[in-house]
Amino acid sequence: MINLYTTHIASLSIHRVGNKSKNEPILLSSEPYKMDDEITPLLKEFFLKPFRDKEENYFNFTGEVDLDFHEIYNCAAQIFGNPESIHEESKKITKHLYDQSIHPLIKSGEVYVAYLENVQLDNVKMDAIGIFKSELKQDFLQFKETDTQLEALLQQGVNLNKLDKGCIIFNTHKEEGYKILSVDSNRYDAKYWLESFLGVDACEDDNFRTKKYLKFCQDFAKDVVLPAEDKKEEVMFMNRAVNHFAKNDTFNESAFMNEVIENPDLIPEFNHYKTEQAPKYKIEDLTSFNIANTAVSDARKKIKNVINLDTNIQIKMDFINSDSADKFVEKGWDEEKQMYYYLVYFNKEQKS
Image 1 (cartoon, rainbow, N blue to C red):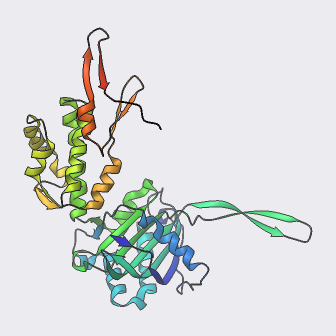
Image 2 (tube, helix red, strand yellow):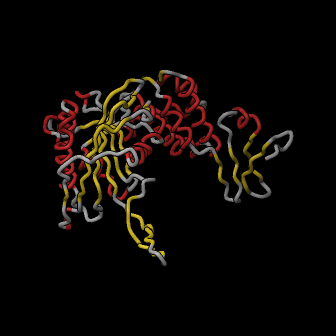
Image 3 (tube, rainbow, N blue to C red):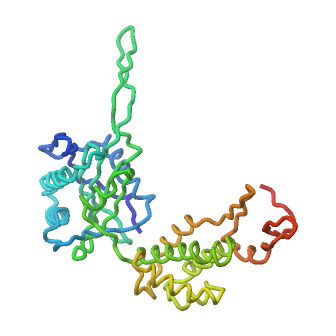
């Protein structure tokens, strides 16, 4: 769990990078940015707000070679060891970003490198490094007033309500490549930020394992349960799966299968599907792990609980009171109309 409300920006360096393949320039500021009471809270909100609402999917620095040769990892280690070096290291970080800006779609923009204090991660206070980039500019009007006239001037600037790219490097788990959160609002160049510039990979922690196993279950429901049964059973399978994760602190695959897979004929199908698809989800040897509640909550929000019919009718299943679907919804076949139907039982209609 991350808490950024008490975070303080101890120092900030601002540079600009262009697109290297288009021969656009790079500008490295000679001094750190001078903070003031007016703009500092606005910049803090601009930098950190996207991370408060983001799923906590952590990354760490990785690479084909030893971390000692990893550009951004080395910069981070130097900064954490000597925070006074952050401005000079920020220039190296910006140069590295510029060297990766070679795809025609990559936009020029401002690069902000901040030293963050009082960051709380899992209830532990620590320092962190923020690397942020603003790319997209918006038009706005600036007004010039004279004695007899008000003139409108069209200018361009950064929208402080939307950060284009950013990452926070936490001063923890150094030997594993630190813990990192990343945001990227522009998906047209995703590899540029995460892979080419940062050189990170997903942390295979409990959050990662919980998320990946639930995604595997969701695809199993779609690819196997739906063709073998029907849409209702697909929805109910995922409902049972999420509920199993929600009420347990640890995951055990045998207990999961016994509780969630009601049709015994689907058990060998489940084992076969896992054997075939496990590498895709990185769950090859995963049969037990600690469950991350945040990943379960995020998964529940994304799972569709609606049956869409080709007659322009929707049936919404209630995940909270899931027994209702089993008790009061029946599927059948009408010989006369040669159509399937759902029979729904109820006592009275609820007021909306």
